[in-house]
Image (cartoon, rainbow, N blue to C red; front, side, top):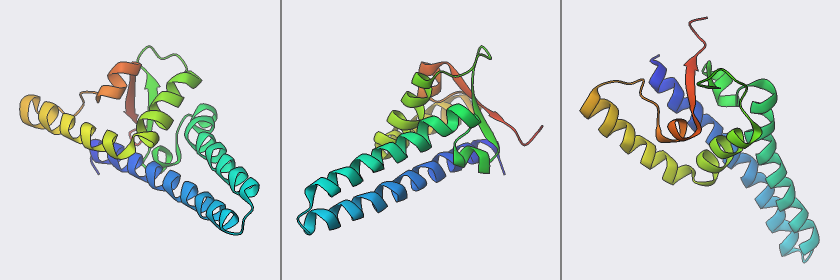
Length: 143
C-alpha cells in the first residue's frame, strides 16, 4: 500500500475512534440528562473530553504514535529529530485533526490534490499542518 494512502487511512482511523468514543459518552450524557440528572450528564461529557485528550495527546506523547499511525506503520517526527512537544501533539492531533476534522480533511485533500498531484506530482510534500508545526510523517514499514 502506498505511503500517502497509509497516512490518510491512519488519520481516518484516528478520527473514527475519536468520534466513536465521543459518541458513546455523549449518548450516556443524553440518557442522564433525559432522566433529569444533569450533573451526571456533565460528568459524562467531561469524561468524553478526557478520553479524547488521552487518545489524541497522551498516547502519541508516550508511545510516539496514535492508534491509526501504529496500525498503518507511520510516525510523526520533528524535522530536527527532537522529541515532539505536548503542544505540538495537542495542536496536530487534537485540534487540527479532531476538532476541525471534516473541514481539515477537505482542506488537506484539496491542498494535496492541487499542490502534489496536479502541479508538482510529488507525493512527499508535507501538508499545511506539518509545515506549520515543522513535523513530517515517516514510513516505519521500511525498517
